[in-house]
Amino acid sequence: MSARNLSSFSSNSLDPRTRPSRIATLGILAIMLLLAVNFCSGVAVWWGQTMQAEQLQTPSWLRPTLVLHGCMFPVQCILFGILLAHHIRVGWRLRANLLSGFATEFIFAGLILTGAGLYYVGAEEWRDRVVWAHRLLGLLLPLALAVHIAMGLRWGKQAASQVG
Ligand code: HEM
Ligand code: HEM
Image 1: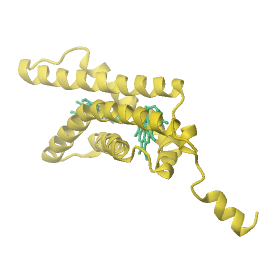
Image 2 (image 1 turned 120 degrees about the horizontal axis):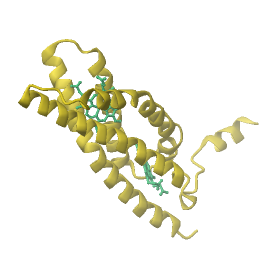
Image 3 (image 1 turned 90 degrees about the vertical axis):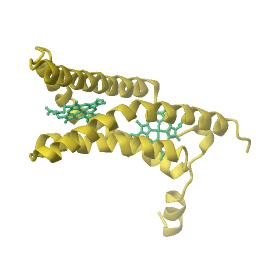
C-alpha cells in the first residue's frame, strides 16, 4: 500500500449513517447485566455495612455479597477494555456523543481505580475517602449511562436520516 493510500485509509472514513459505533443487542444486554450485578451487589454491601455499624452485628449475607462484588472486578476491567477497543474508539473517530460518553467513561474508570484502591489503600483516613468516592461514582454510573444511551439514540436517529 502506498503512503498516500495508507493515509487516506487511516483518515476518518466512517459513515455516521451506518452507525458504526452501535453496540449489538446482545452486547447491550451483557453490559446492562454486568453493570446491574455490580450496582445491586455494591448497594447491598453499602446497606449491609450501614446495618453492621448501627447494630454492631454483621449480616450473614454481607461477606458473600462482597465476595461476589469483588469477583466481578476482572470482568468489569475486561468490559471496559472491550468498550475502549471498539465502541469508544469508533465514537471518538466520529466525534459523536462525546460529552455523555466521556462522563460515563470517566465514572466507569473511576470505579475501577477506586475499586483497586479498596484492595490496597491501608491508612484509615485515606481508605474512608476512597470508599466514599467509590460509592458516589457507583450511584452516578446508572444516571450517566441512561443519559448517554438516550443521547446516543437521538444522535443515531439523526445520523441515520442524513441525506447524502
Ligand atoms: C464506558 C463508557 C461507555 C459505555 C458503557 C457506553 C455504552 C453505550 C450504550 C449501551 C449505547 C446505546 C447502544 C448503542 O446505540 O450502541 C451507546 C451509544 C453510543 N455511544 Fe457509548 N458508551 C460509552 C462511552 C462512549 C464514548 C466515550 C463515546 C464517544 C467517544 C461513545 C459514543 C457513543 C455513540 C456515538 C452512541 C450512539 C451509537 C448509535 O446508536 O449509532 N460512547 N453507548
Ligand atoms: C464497575 C463497577 C464497579 C467496580 C469495578 C467495583 C469494584 C470494587 C472492588 C474491587 C471492591 C473491593 C472488594 C473487596 O474489598 O473485596 C469494591 C467494594 C465496594 N464497592 Fe464496588 N465496584 C463497582 C461498582 C459499585 C457500585 C455501583 C457500588 C454502589 C453504589 C459499589 C459499592 C461498593 C462498596 C460499598 C464496597 C465495599 C467498600 C469497603 O470495603 O468498605 N461498587 N468495589
